[in-house]
Image (tube, rainbow, N blue to C red; front, side):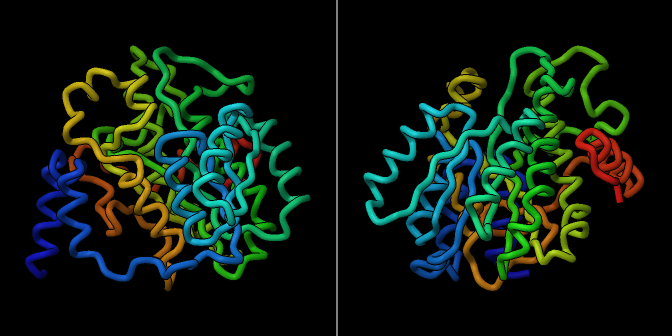
Length: 320
């Protein structure tokens, strides 16, 4: 292991320097192989939660690389506003606003049907939509809101998009997780968070852990269709979601927080770099990262299979 790799690993395990803007600035000096200019010209990418924060920054970066970008949000006014702002910055870009509530499985089905009728192929899907609720809430389908938003909706959406993704020569799917998942074990017996006192931050981290745990399974599931699957976390970024949901955390860490653009970097790199990185892995700052740092969070293959079986049943899929 060279000195750069040692420094990188130390930053990662120390958490605060690795997840902050300091870690980003140190690491970016060692990066090589940025995506080529116009690396995504002729390709189409979709980003959920693209109306603000990291999602909007991802859409901005993809458009700068030449992609047609489908910007998705559950709020029409906000996504149209975000699209107009990016269009002013990229007058030659093909930016399209679309509305879908990722937590609503029936709306996901409606959205994919309409999208498939308009797009002959889709090269990149970035599942960035997220929320951190104050209290436990369920969707119309009866699922806990963070599980539906971070896991069930994205998996169903990707499953339904498989024919459109398979029409691409190099389709890639990216799940936006969180470093907070390191604090949580896989909720094998209670994926819907029905047991015990509910905390929004815990629900958020639990479902982000589920994303990471399922990524290798999804990579195998979608491999026959040529789809590469990645999960990543952006570090600590100063976004509207942090302002709204974690005001105390933001107050304490504001000088250390990354910009939304810095948080978006690895997602854009995973979408555009050539050749495609190894599928089924967890990433941060352009490097593969361990899935666990704490012994109590480790799960077995059987645990992963149980959670996948639950999620598959919840969205109406066979689990194998």
